[in-house]
Length: 120
Image 1: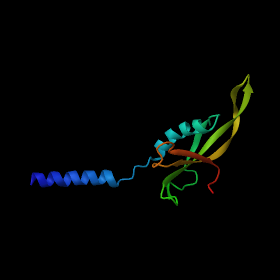
Image 2: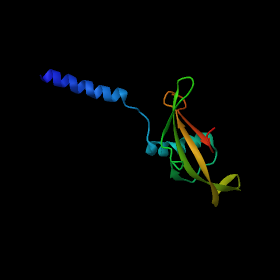
Image 3: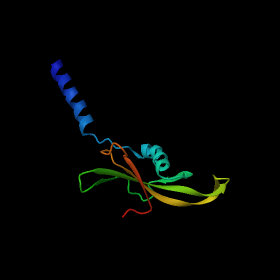
Image 4: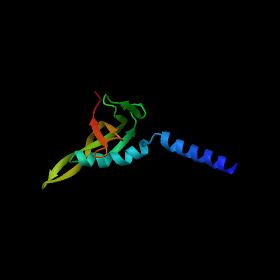
């Protein structure tokens, strides 16, 4: 009886680990967005104003070649910058930018991408 209980417990634990989706939530995406932004753009955004401003939640998209991409949307504040002896100096004014953060778990080299504005 103990062996049967152990086998059931082992099967349940493994099945939960194998079939559960391993996608990051908005908290993880919020932590990773500045790192992905830094890799693509020379000037950093100031702050994240809103998570999921489009109220779409985390979208799961399957591409034509079978790749799965998770899409998150953020509203960030991008300040204007002045040049001060080749050093950017942040100003108080700026604008809000809609940012789509795309996470592709199958891509081991560059799993995160950013798209500004509305998705096509």
